Amino acid sequence: MRGAPNRDLLDVILANCRIPEQNWGDLQALVAGLVTGERRVHSLITRFGVDTVLKGMDDLIDYTARKVEALIRRMPRGRYEFCDFIEDDVVSDIPIRLKVAMTVGDGEIHLDFTGSDVQVGSALNVPTGGRAHPFMAIALFNYFITKDPGIPLNAGVLRPIRMTLPVGSVVNPQFPAACGVRYATVLRVYDAVLGALARALPHEIPAAAATPRSASSRPPRRRPSRSRCPPSSSGASISSPTRPDPGAGAAGMRCGSTCRCSGPRDRSRRAGWSGFASPPGAWPAAAPG
Image (cartoon, rainbow, N blue to C red):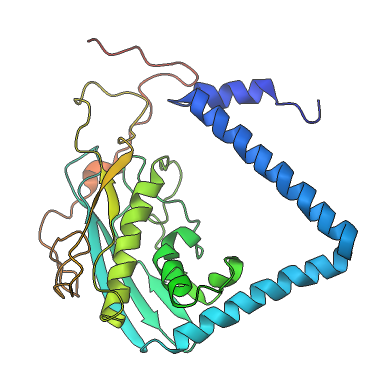
């Protein structure tokens, strides 16, 4: 029935969630937001006409893009590199490296994530599809609207930003990579891009962000289960509001500009994703105790 949930599909979705009640609440909230937005767009069209509304949308996006391009032209041109780490991917003890090279040109910025680690066996992968994705440029967005609070937040903010996101990396994973806790990685990408921005503008970006960190406690590693998700991020690490050590990562980990970091780089343990321990559609048996 139109306007009513497809119960069969909904049951499949909720049966594959750890917190089905909360996820169902999220879905209902999304639908409510879309319904409200649809109602207001129709109201605008009734008042001004569809052509005027469509032109207004395009003009507003163009206006934002011009404002952002003007800010970029005031930044020093050049290439600025930075890398940071997620402490581990929960499946192993190997840190996840996130590397970015930011190139500032004439009214545009290129973010190159070449050198970031390959996709991992837990849910920390960020599915960007290989295209410029807003999640990867949040640090730039925040910088732009801090410098010019009058910039409308819309797709025009992303228009002057180009990205290189290597296929099979943690920032452009391929099927069947898990990605349910992708925003934990996005927060560390924020740190890395902010670090590159600090090298371009050291007097405007004096310290790292108070980025949420992964919870310090986690359940013991028992036999494999369907879920390979780390706990949600919590807490924050706040840096001193002083000029950072040029060789220090945003989370306080030292890393040179060429990113020749010590430590194991072998990801072979992550390549052998073994799939679910329970058959599709069946909940795994509860672990004892």
